[in-house]
Image (tube, rainbow, N blue to C red):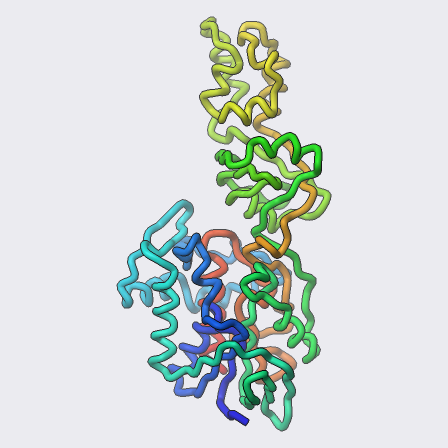
Length: 392
């Protein structure tokens, strides 16, 4: 039996941050993970450059059944705190759209930094280790694994969600919560591409690879980002963002020309009495293939002089209010995050400790806290891991 102060299950972003902070307090820490390498999801994130945080972190950019829960952690360990760590290691980074921060070189820099910090405080990392059984006996947690047995006073669950199973995602964290009588809210894929119904798929699959800026919305949220047509459906930042707010059976509204009022533009050009065809005007705003998927060639070849006000309004509505009903999503296979998870009402927002099981903590994606695309989920990992690390 290997006895220690703290065991953290999960060597991802949240688990490593928690290990660092716990070790700084002089606690003996062992991190267990079934993967053969730590931080696999860190390495593949952001196209290999890790979108590690965002300049504009705020609680409104997170989804949870308890929308106030994340505020405490995010305010106590902020994006500026993580940036200070980044800068100590002289990791070069750059900002993309909407405050998103990426490594200039590689996500490996972030992982190397975290592992270096773990080494400084003597964190023990045991990988390729599968959890077989967990019990609470005489004020300690006993963990049986395929590579030996462990005992600890504090147990931290940092196992992540169900997204990208090929990276090793499992429901272990939810099973542990349920074993100890902690409520787990239903889960589903978030930040995930949409699939289309067969007739729409046939129609739009010819546009595969085309990306267009747009404003996408439903009754609950709106995002101004780019949309990507794929051979399966619709993806790109706009669709990934709205997918977290989408419910099966709902339409998604897409404004394909958020930068212009098409009704005003067409009427203005019609008044100029220049021989513009509808096609000539629209080709200045959108890829030709997208236009031809939405309007027939006969209409496109008409002169603006031949279009009535009503026709112009209908054309404008087609581009500003394109409505599409997804068939579903691609699911956990390609989802970036998992919505739902361990019920935040059962966890202390200050310490991340279970309210009913002393010594049991939950951090990161396993919880019912899901951020927007753009570094928000990593910041939640850093913040929740840091907070738990002050108390375990």
